[in-house]
Length: 68
Image (cartoon, rainbow, N blue to C red; front, side):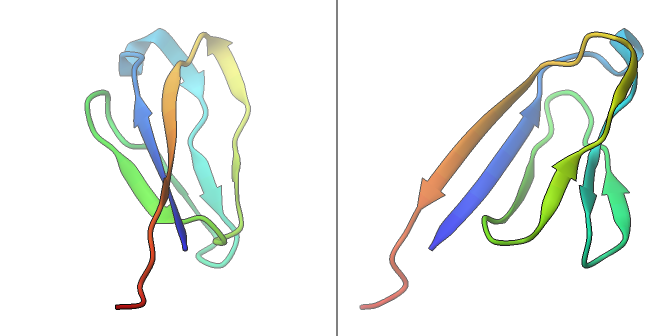
């Protein structure tokens, strides 16, 4: 299985807009700088448009095996 981790690097006042929209939840999440958003890789999501400034994030894909 795969998990996806996103960590915002930009300060909240460096950009407007953005966030990660999750279709199944019909909700946009906006973690703060220094925080993280971790979810299953197969959860349908998308980045929302940045309307001003620059937004930088660190993305990591974490592979793991649940079988023992």
